[in-house]
Amino acid sequence: MRDDVVEILYSEMEPALRAMIAYESNGAFDVRAAQSIIDRLRRESPVVRWDMGVGFFLMDDVVAAGRHPALVSSHPDTWLPLGMGSRGPLPPLHVDGEEHRRYRRLLDPLLAPKKVAPMESEIRKLADELIEGFVADGRVELHDAFCVPLPSTIFLTLFGMPLADMDFLVAMKDRILKNEGTTMEEKDAIGVEAGDRMRERLRQRLDERRREGAPRDDLIGEFMRFELDGERLSDDEIVNIMHLFTIAGLDTVTSSLSCLFAWFAAHPDKRRRVVADPSMLPAAIEELMRFESPVPASGPRWATEDTEINGVPVRRGEMVFLCWASANVDPATFESPLEVRLDRPANRHIAFASGVHRCLGSHLARLELRTAVDQFHRRIPDYWITPGEEPRYELAGVRQARYLPVTFTAAR
Image (tube, rainbow, N blue to C red):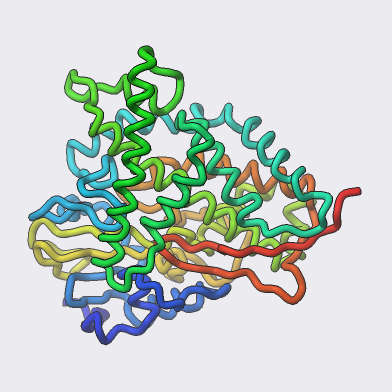
């Protein structure tokens, strides 16, 4: 047993630790400078053993656990997932081993860099259209006016879902991830109810596509053409994939954009450097994704057998928690990790997760972030947090600036 393992009951945990491990909605991270809280958790509790399992906060441990074949994404007795609004596993996130590899071989090529690169012009055009809606006003609440509609529209178009479904799907996604439940079990039960409603809509759209006959050239069309072991996927299997893609596609880029714009708005000198030299933007986005870590932690994992992670025993059936955000501010990996260095070299952050379940859509997400921020800076290079107001942050599975009031020089 290592000497840095903190043993504690869940009932005795401080609010920040409960908010991180169990997504408890207690406001502990509803602040602008969440990094200092996350860093304190890393220092005070590098490894946590609590009633249900073990949590890891250091980069080496998080990476090792993410790669460990005995840690899986569904409970080894029930094979049920937790936290995504589903009554069963959602591949590829909730499957492991060879089954996971088969699904990733099908899905990875759909969102590979060369596949998504041609979408840049479409993303830039949409960004410009959204900006046109408020550029003359001199102020805007950026989360709802830009951060939500841009990635949601791009995703639904790529996916092959009607844009008219956006408000419903976003509402169901929010209900799954950010509901009023006070315990992990309550949140999951409410989320599953919302997931059922969302799946009804997804199945309706799939049924409509079946009646069309030949699949279209979009993601749903690709799912309809997929084969595993020589057989086409069933409708249930396709809806499971659609369910996962909907949650991911409508949430993570929105949250990331809100965090990036909030940071740039609050740091004008560094923003002006990036505006003056757009070649800095890719590295700046990588650094801000490390620093902000909009998706701060993995979903729950479970041990299928007694094992250990870097000398920490993990028993079969125990839950395992991995904190990407604390790993991203680990000084053993990053020099001065609480300092934003927009030109940080060799930035091996894990904001898009680590191990076999690394984010499937990371290439598209990076393209959207780079293109959206670049186009915004071309049209509105100088912007700041509206005087007398503050961004409102929240952590509910993902961290975002849910209210982001910015002011800028209005276009004439």
